Amino acid sequence: MDAIDDAGVYRLSDSLALIQTIDYFTPIVDDPYTFGQIAAANALSDIYAMGGKPLTAMNVVCFPSTTMDMSILRAILEGGLATLRAAHCVLIGGHSVEDAELKYGMSVTGTIHPDSVLAKGNAQPGDRLILTKPLGTGIINTAIKAKMASASASAHVAQSMITLNKDASEIMQEIGVNACTDITGFGLLGHACEMLQGGTVGMEIHAAAIPFFPEAEEYARQGLVPGGTRRNKNFRGHQITFEPALPPETSDILFDPQTSGGLLIAVAEAKAAHLLEKLRESGIKDAAIIGEVVSGHNGKIVVT
Image 1 (tube, one colour):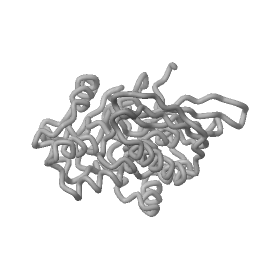
Image 2 (cartoon, one colour; image 1 turned 90 degrees about the horizontal axis):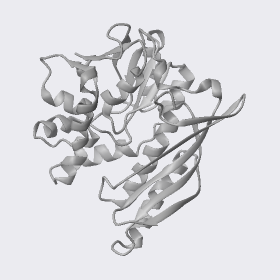
Image 3 (cartoon, one colour; image 1 turned 180 degrees about the vertical axis):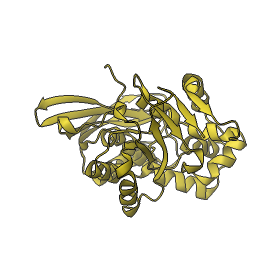
Image 4 (cartoon, helix red, strand yellow; image 1 turned 90 degrees about the vertical axis):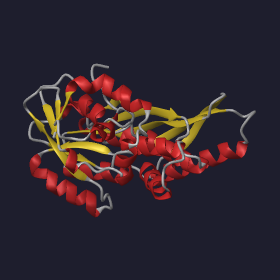
């Protein structure tokens, strides 16, 4: 518990360890099958961020059976199972409780060699930072709830949230990287700060290089920003310096709480171009080098 990492790791032997995580939340889309897919992808992501392979999963369900038809729950579970199958991960059970508010997710167990664990806090000076998915899911989901999102924006963000980080994880393990985390509720900057926790390095992040959903900027400009964005700013704002010329919506997007976001990878400069090329060749078209790890301003991030 001395470090902030994405999942717990338990060594079974010199060559095998378990990775364990759990995540569940309330619906962020209207379609129950899609919600199940997203929730499963989000839960699996912590295993991928640590460099592991998902092995088994168990459903976590809170369901209002007196006010909601059971067909909705069936569709959610089918969506989650479809995502597990894509991950080659086995559903072995779960638990459900009666609750006034629907919630769904999974506990996931994976495996890894103990020497291959990717911790957040091992980024080295000179490392390049690669982000594998665009930002803005929180902003667009807020616009969806307000019935102000376009059909194309809704479809684009749903597809991104459904997409597993499996390929990105396997490629980064093949190339060899120094550190990784996945971008979820604390936003890009919040999770980047976790990578710096207790360390002796900082980061420079280039706003113009960051991939984000095209509509996210306009929706943020209209004030369609989730409450989690403000909480993230309040919690981590003292560690971030923004270039004064950057527009206000930039900070909204960089602090935007993501659901089933991409991986943030710290990789040696000599490997960065090759890793980026491999990611894009595999179909991860939005992957981009967004900054670097620096030896100055320890524990701080400068956004230019």
